[in-house]
Structure formats: structure tokens, C-alpha cells
Figure 1 (cartoon, helix red, strand yellow):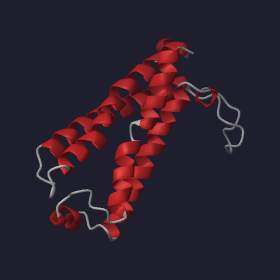
Figure 2 (tube, one colour):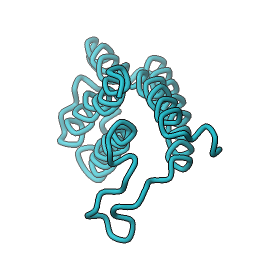
Figure 3 (cartoon, one colour):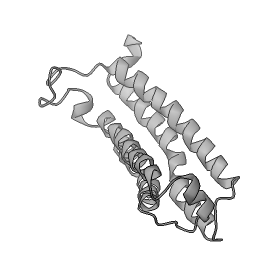
Figure 4 (cartoon, rainbow, N blue to C red):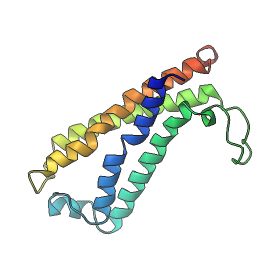
Length: 162
């Protein structure tokens, strides 16, 4: 396994952490310099906190799946998983799902960063910088996932089966 592929997959799993921690803080009621109107619009703290926690956990879980593209569990299902444990993972399906992930994460990151920089959410001048710091790493998610998906595709011989 090339070092760049391992590094890319691990980076994909890490790029969500800053925005996830930021979301969890918002869910707990820490405004991080956002205007009160933004906190009220997100209904946080309150019922909106559930959405923020879900989004933070879901994003990290999905990003974690990139590690399967460079680990053995991306080729053979772990034995502890009912019904499929020990069976070979279908490379074509992994490449298709991962490619959809590349598309989704690239669009999501670009639109979110664009929207964030064109919205006036900050109550404090430093809040815009904080938002940039926690969300700009998401721009790496799509391209790095694309590189790891391409490598998985080549390594598993999926090129001949699609």
C-alpha cells in the first residue's frame, strides 16, 4: 500500500474533526462569536442541537469509511458482521459508492464554504475567521477521497469489472 494512499485516507477521516467539534460546541450552546439570531435560527441550544450532534457524528462516521479503502476490512468483511462476515467485499460496489461520496463531498464542501463566506452569520469579527478555519479543511475531503478511490479501483482490479 503506497504511503500517499494511507496518508490520504487518514486525512479524509480527520478533515471533519474541526467542523465536528465546532458543531458540538454550538449544540452545547457555545456561540463561537455567532450572532444570537444565528443561534436562534439553528434552535440551539435546544432541538437544533440534536441535528448538529447528528451531523457531526454522521460526517465523521462517513469519513471514517475512507479507511476501508486502504485497510483489509475494505476487501473482506470483518468476521463479526452478521451474514457477510468473512466474505469478499465487492470492489465494484465500493468504487461506485465511494465515487458518489466524492461527488457529494466535493459539492457539499464547495457550496458550504461559498455560502459561509457570503453570509453574515458573525456577531463578532473573529467568528468569520473561526468558521473559515473549521470548514476549509472540508475542501480536501472530495479530492483526497477521489485519489484513494482511484487507487482502490486500480488495486482491486475493479477496472475490468465495471
